[in-house]
Length: 329
Image (cartoon, rainbow, N blue to C red; front, top):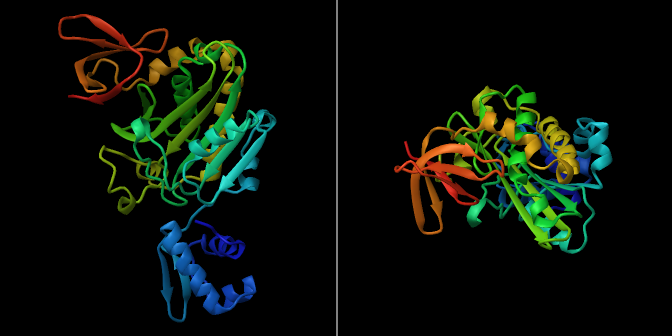
């Protein structure tokens, strides 16, 4: 999939959701009307966009899009965040922001490399699932970070700390009815709002690198969500209005980057009490899936290492480092 420069410019012109005359678009881009028509078809086919063509009025997207831009996103960043970013990339389309940065990490990508995408063709969720990623609708973010000191042990519980930072960023946008489902889901009103995926490589006792992926549903069209098999929601449904994606993206970085810079020194303990405040499984009956095994019990929160505590029917409380939890009642 490739967008030519004129196709990118055309997309930017159409992003306001208003009608644009084919003649005016052609003159603005310095191309023929026939080429405009071909570009429109390409955008619709490759990006999954719905673009109406009305005789006498021109072309219009079915809804306005706020595209991510370096200028708008950077204006939402704190000075500290700007200093921690070594490279900021915004892709119109990519297979997976996580996969891309994992590959860059193999090529010794600098810590603080940040990647956003407008569309993912192979977005990655937990356990190999697809993360539904339509164009210009949500937040698809990955950050590459190097942890030079204590290896895997030094970043134990990182996904929980990331979850706390995401909740902070959402609360800054006046989204307070949000919580965390162990180990890495963002929940709102009992439905999935987002997820976290961390991929780590390196030495057990030496330095390691991590790619921290965050996906958040900002506006997820029903037509794009038919493959999702669990209850989901988006910020637009929750608030009744579409938030600024650039402001939200900047807010996420303002929370995540300082935490990543301090995590090796501070560890999970600095964020654990706050994580427990947002725990939406605490005290609830749940099922824990580990491979082919299913365990049932009541969630008793997490221990100081961030492991899930599950109270079984016989009263025994067990700690689990991994698994997938679902509400059972």
